[in-house]
Length: 90
Image 1: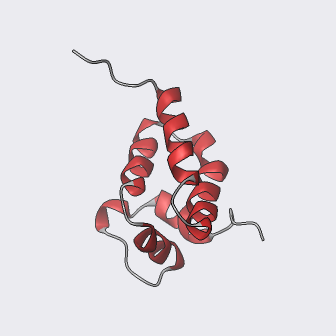
Image 2: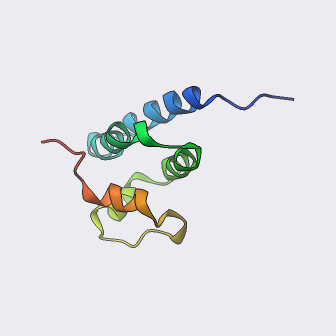
């Protein structure tokens, strides 16, 4: 039987995946969101973010910018935080 990764290992993996999306725009948006909010996340919120990381960057960015509706499974306080865009510094 394989052991599930620890919470700290999951956070480290999520940080890497958030900042290595393939485009700088997505890195700043998704990575910036991670950096700003992950410190307060519980396991369920990390599950949400890991699910978000499986989505295409263009979709995530459209949901954050409110140009496309997000799927119902992403609705809630974390999506609202993503849509604030207060984590992107220029």
